[in-house]
Length: 337
Ligand code: TYD
Image 1 (cartoon, rainbow, N blue to C red):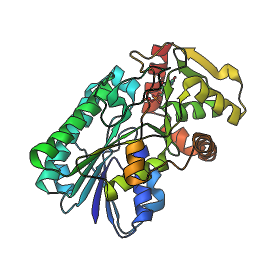
Image 2 (image 1 turned 180 degrees about the vertical axis):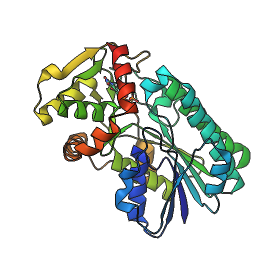
Image 3 (image 1 turned 120 degrees about the horizontal axis):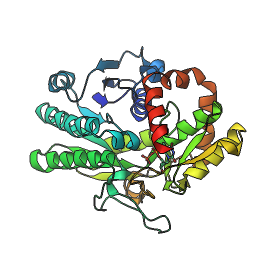
Image 4 (image 1 turned 90 degrees about the vertical axis):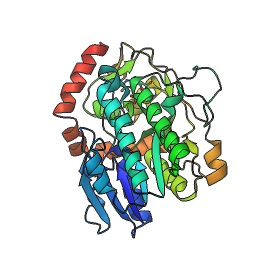
């Protein structure tokens, strides 16, 4: 088996690559990643010398590089994407380019090379927002109602994936996951940002009233779910993956402050994100029923593991938090004041 993972140097992609290398030491893994600000190969140090692991530095929007990399590939698992909503609000162009154009280029190559599976990693955000108080959750049948430029770019890429299935018979699957968190998470999303800020005694910028809620899934559970979809999922189907908790910005801050023994004065309420989706939640009964998937790491355990990891890997996050990132974050922080 030869499997190409796009975005394998990213947070979720690298967890999946590490998972695959353990689960299938005989599979050839091609990690195809352009190494943007959010990509970092040190996430893969432990498997870098594995004889069946290969890294190709390449851009999914470069048709020739994609074509070369896909030679002899049996399965593609497509993680590569721009993912941060706040960045998409400031400049959507790279989101359209990478997420929409990049996916199209991969689909074309997958078709040409007659891959046996194209798995597209999508998001719950394509379904739009839910009311805070309602019990409703989205599922695979919910209509698409993306609201941020990021969500719209992922929705567009999902539509292309389905179109390549119905039009050309490309054997696709799609997953929609809730927010992932865990080790090696780039510190711009709320959990790693608040943990690293707390450890540096810096304020935690809580958007708006801090009550907007998300469901958080520990990243290793996500990798396990993707692997199940690849090995047992039905072609042409989408699967929702959930963590089954409902956690708002204030709760994220409080749990991190308690675990790091830092004062509540680090909580800083700032201007809300424009178009801030109030709540995301998924009904993941399909993947449980069909593939027997349930998350193994609950939020309490996952956040503890994550905080411990950031405590023990200060060098890593200090390095990725410097340079280009620092400039972005300062600009973004000014905007939210
Ligand atoms: P984020 O981690 O950016 O993921 P997404 O917007 O894709 O769900 O945000 C998660 C929640 O945390 C969301 O309600 C916005 C909020 N948030 C803050 O309050 N402060 C922050 O600095 C960030 C990054 C997010």
